[in-house]
Length: 105
Image 1 (cartoon, helix red, strand yellow):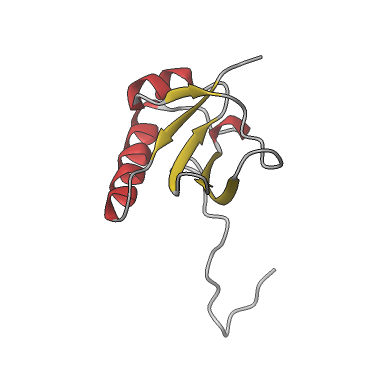
Image 2: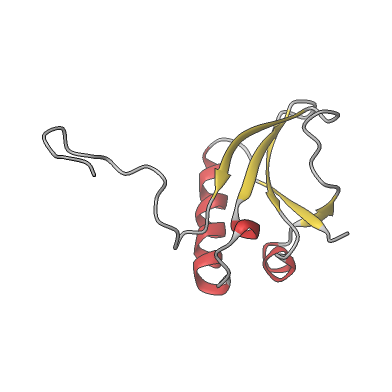
């Protein structure tokens, strides 16, 4: 089994700064845009802290970010709640605004 890693996002405004740094490093060093490039952001209800989870295949990036090894996140047994997902910054956005008067094909 390959290793998962997790990175604490901090509290308050620090969460956004940490995510900005992750995005910058991913754009610079992470060339793989695939399923392993989707990182879940989870709330640990027990500690009231936010974590960014890095799936297997991201060992190099995990080392650069100083993320710690962890077990596979288990949404059933653990007090974890998935809040969002971080996609590779080079991915096209999933949602694109459409002007009201335009025709969408």
